[in-house]
Image (cartoon, rainbow, N blue to C red; front, side, top):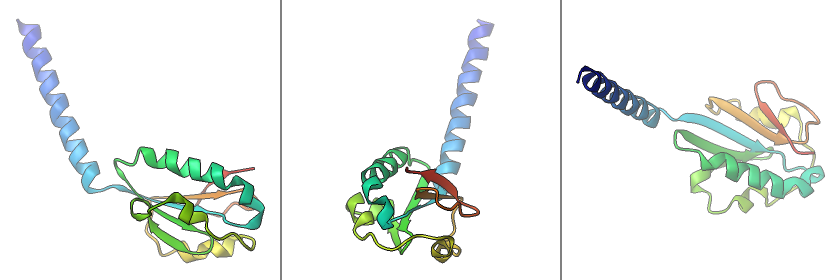
Length: 129
């Protein structure tokens, strides 16, 4: 009978811990900024980038995801009607200066989807060959 009491106590403590962690993470979601390189050289990689963003966003329970391109900030991913709208325009070449517009954006994690021609400081680079 003692083991049943100990096991019950363990279950109750586990549920309380889960509820506290869930409430904390729900009220303070991780801020993620995803920026896609929309230069001409990556036109063929756009479908792969779209799939990557969709897969990343599947587990967004405790994340708030903002999306942009190397040209402009688009907005919150949940507010975008279609991921295709991210890749409407492709022109020019991306460089480290094109990401400076995002310096004022608050983000816990910054992800740059590109071909790896340059690696910006402070960003996680996801390469699409």
